[in-house]
Length: 625
Image (cartoon, rainbow, N blue to C red; front, side, top):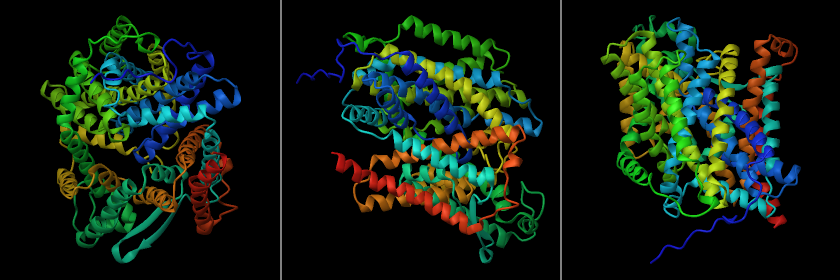
C-alpha cells in the first residue's frame, strides 16, 4: 500500500512571512530570557525544562496579539530561535561550573567570558550542523513513525492559536508572580525561603523551600516523577543520615577529618549530607545515567545506523523541503573544528578535537532520533556526558596528560559534546514542528544558528554574574550536575574520590533498577538537599489533585513555565544587585520579619495560584468554546 503524501498546514507553494525582523528579534530575546532562566534553574536543582511550548505561546501573544500579524510561520520562527537558549543552557550549566569550582580551589585559572562563549558556541553550532543532514531521514521519511512529542505538541499549540486559543497571559502572570515572591524572600528578606523542622530522635530534619520555580518543576514533571525524586530525598535524610549519625559515633570517616559526632554537633544533618550523602548521590546519579545509556544501546545503535543511512537521501519538493546548502553546513562544521583545535583559550588538543567529532556526531544522531522516540525529557544526555567524560579522561591519562590542564580539557570536551547532544535534540524537535506547519527548513536552520549565537553570548555573562554573587557549589547555587562531572574527572585523574561511598550509591541505583523504578529521578533526589525535592513533591501533588478533579487546563503548565522563567530572571537581577553592592540596602529583615507564618501563607498562595490556572483556566476554555 502506497504511503499517502503528507500535506503541511501551510502548503509548499504558499509563501507567507516567516524569517522577518520581528520574528528574529523576538526569538533572540526569548533565547536569552529562557537561556538565562534555565541556567539559574539548572544551577539550583540540576534540572531544566523545555522552552519550546512557552516560547510558542509567547510568540503567539506577541505576533498575533500585540502586533496583529497573521503568519503562523513567524510565530514558529520565534519559538525556533527562542528554544535554542534552553538547550545551550542545559549543556553549559551541567559541565562548565566545574571550571569555576576548580578555580575556587586554586587548581585552575578562572574561565573568562570568551572561553565560555566559544565552548558554548562551538557545541551549539556543531549540534545544528550535525543535525541538518539527518533531517530528511528522521523528520520527513519517518513522519508517522517518530512522534517527536514536544515538537508535535508545539505545532498543536501554534495551530490552536490560529483558532483563537490563548495562553500567553498565563506565562506572563506566572513570571510576574514568581519574580515578586523571589524579590520578597531573597531581596527584601521579610519572609524565609524555607521552612525547617528538626527531628532530634533521628538526628535529621525535614525542610521545604517555598520558591515558585520548584513548585512549577514539580507540577510540570507530575506526581509520579516528583515522588521518585522525593523518595530519594527520604532515603538520604531519613535513613542514611540517621544511620551515619547514630552509629558513626567517634569514627573519623573520609572525606571528613573530624569524628562524625563532632561533625553533627557543629553542622547538623546538613554537614552529614555534605560530607557523605552527596558522594552516594553522585554514585547513584552516575550509575543511573550509565544504566539509562546501556538500556538504550540497542535503540542507540539502530538509531545511529538508520540516521546515517539517510544522510545521502534527497527530499523531493519545493520550499518545505529546502535544507541549508550542504556546503554551508560542512563549512560551519569545519570552521568550528579548527577553532576548537587552534584557539588557545580552549585547552583541547588534536586528540580531543578528533574525540569531539567522533562522539559529537554519534551522539547528535542518537539524540535526534531518541528525542523523536521518547521526547527530550527522557533523552539520556547526562548519561552520554558521563560516558564521554569517563572515556576522554581515561584516554588523556593514558597519553600522559595529567594535572589541572588535563582535567580542564576533559570538562571542555564533555561540555562541547553535552551541548551538541542537547542542541541536536532541540533542533530536531523544532524541525518537526516546522514540518507539520509547513515552515521552510533552511530558514529554520538559520534561525537555530542565530538562537545558538544569542544564547552562547548570554550564557557566559549569566554564569559569571551568578558565580560572583553567590558562587557555584553554595547553598543558593549547588550546581549539582557540574559538581558530579567534577567528581568524575577528579576521581579518574587523581584517585581522590571516597570510592566506598560512591559505590554505595551505585548499588543503591542498581537496587532501584531491579525494582523496576526509574533510577535517575531517585538518584537526583538522593543527591539534592531535601528542601528542594520536598518543594518539587508539593508541585507534583498539586498536579495530582488537579487531575483527580477532572480535565487539567494547559494553562497550568504555561503558568508554571512562567513561574520558572520569572524566578530565574529575578534571581539574575538579584545577583546583579549583589555584585554592585546594592542588595544590602533592600534587606528589611532587621525591621520586618513575618516568620514561619508568612512563609506558610506565601507557600499556600503559590499553590492556590497554580490550582487556579490548572482548574479555572479549563473552565474558561469550556465557556469560550
